[in-house]
Image 1 (tube, rainbow, N blue to C red):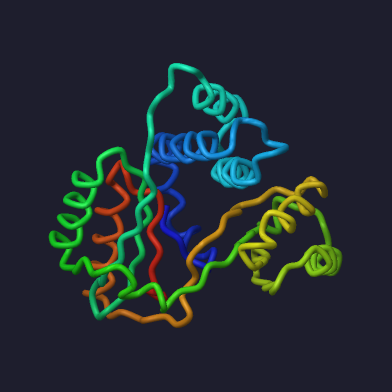
Image 2: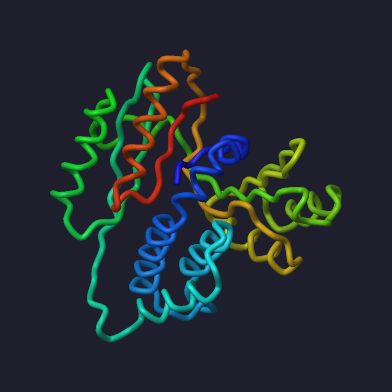
Length: 241
């Protein structure tokens, strides 16, 4: 799932994402597993699990599938352990990329990520080489067509709950929070029975790089190759379209 602050980018790739939904559910199931292993299966006491479940629902993962993933993760026979690892690198024209993975074999995953960068004309960098170009933010996106709440009411509820920013576009609202306030804001909005198109903590770029037509093709190829890897959870970048 490619991370980007602008919902139009996600909309543009919706057809492709729908075709990959089974793979996305598998990756979300792994995130649920890691959250359960870290804090237990109780949603009331495990804030991380609540956040992952919200992310899963925003990706249209069925409730039964989510419940089954939690039960499977909390089973006595489930001894699978994954580590979270972050890779940083560069794409065409110096576009910065951050790749979050979950892996049970760091050597295998590092080799696969490096190969994806090399094959698509990118360069895998060292830890910290591009992370300073991003900031962690909670992002909640609501499509106007899926929610009947008025703009004024949504703004007031969001800001009162602790949101940092509220952006209005033609088809959607985008609410930005600090990582610390993300869960609180999301839970307040959930109580309004709102439908999220996106709800997760992301690495948002501080500035964007625009690409020419050739570089756009190369950049999209790099993102695709990274997202095809089973261990890759999210790809963040500062490519501005």
